[in-house]
Length: 337
Image (cartoon, rainbow, N blue to C red; front, top):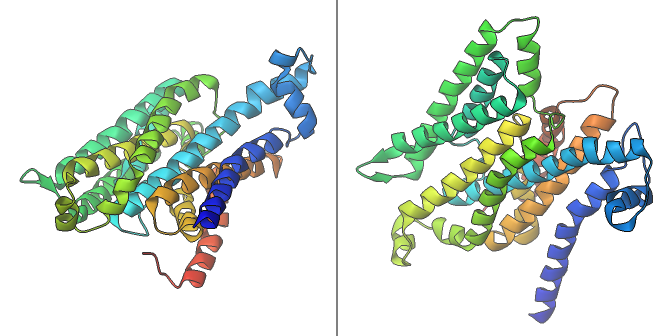
């Protein structure tokens, strides 16, 4: 028992350190390359009195560090939300967009782009419409003051289809010379728009959602039971379901508002986490947070450094995620619970 506990602690420590180590290495990767030693000196130059090269300082603090921080937040957030939804709905195919939040946020962002608003306006509209889509979904699913899992999922599919149709309509009426390319590139996802101001607007929602899910993660084990069994254990099913949906939707809307749609992260990472830590959500949630952050750091670094032109992040996550998911299916035989 003691040896098993020690191995779990070692595993958790490795997963916690992995994103930090990846971030440190990836900060130096790019057209203007820096060694790990030089990167560390620049990062701590405010405390050590070291005078870095102005170009290196600008590249680290003004260009790459905001991207790395955004990648950490988006990867950790979407993985956490995906794991929460999979546990909540007892559905291995549940993703952060199950309730149509990403589609609603995408519509808000496209609306902001058509209004020729700045990034702050685009981000605000994306966040607002993402939350609105979640509220509409949950309102539709309620009947006689209660909501079932099936009704929530079906309502989410309907709302997602509606907002996707509205996004298509916005693309149809957009100027094909200027607005349409901007909208298309935004929808494919990119960390290139990351700034400290954008992070300050979206990060609090992501962090708050992650902390809430992390603190209540053990309740997901009970939520996976049928309603009668969960209620007999003294849990208010309706309230806890609403809490997890609100936290996950807040994370998803914030992520989409800052970097566009990023697929596969919220589906793939929770499955890998279950292979590592089993089906206990007390382990799955923190593992998903760490692996999700690591995965997005690596993907974003490859997106900006692999070619002269930046590759949209959703293309890379799909190219990497789909084959890995197939391997996982072949290895597990589709078993989940």
